[in-house]
Image (tube, rainbow, N blue to C red):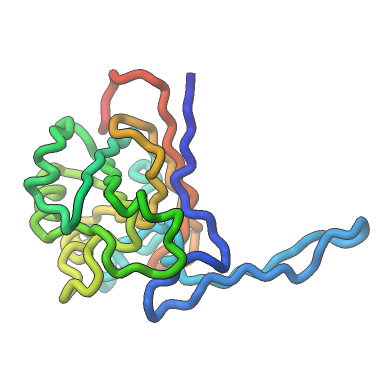
Length: 218
C-alpha cells in the first residue's frame, strides 16, 4: 500500500516572504460564471515557498534550475528528525545513523512544528552549521532538503553552507512541509518550475512510502 505525502508549502498571499523579497500575490482576475473561466494572476519570488536552489543561486556560472539533473530530483530519499535548537552540527547528523548509500536527505526540525501557525517571517528558524555541510559532502549526498526557509541560519556571514554545497553541485530544497512525515526511507519526487536560466524555482515535492524498509537509497 502506498502512502503519498505532499511536502510542499501552499502558495498564497499569506505565505511569509524572506526579508527583502516580494510577498507572494495570488489575485483573481476573473471568476467562472457559466460563460467565462476563473483565471488568477500569480506574482512571487523565485525562492518563494517550497523551492529549489541550483548552483547558480550563489556560484557564478553555476548550473541553472532548468538544467538540473532530474535523476537527482527524483529517487530514493531518507528523512531524519532532529529536534531542538539549531544550528545543526555534523555530530547531530552523525547520530542519525544514516545508511551509507543515501544520496537524498531531507531534514525535519522544529521548523515543522511551527510552520502552520507562522504568519510572518521568523528569523529564528533551524539551519545547518558549516561543519554539517562538510559532513554531507563527505558522505556524497547529492540533494539535501530542510523544512526551513533557508538551509543555514538567518544572517550567516558569507552564506558558507550554501556556497559549499552548491559549489559541489549539491541541490538544495528549502521550505519543505515535513510535520507529518516520520523518519525513514521514501521515494522523492521534486519538480521545480522550468524557469529559463533560473537562479531558483518554486517546486511541488512529494514523498511516496510503500511500507517496505528494504531496497537501496542511492
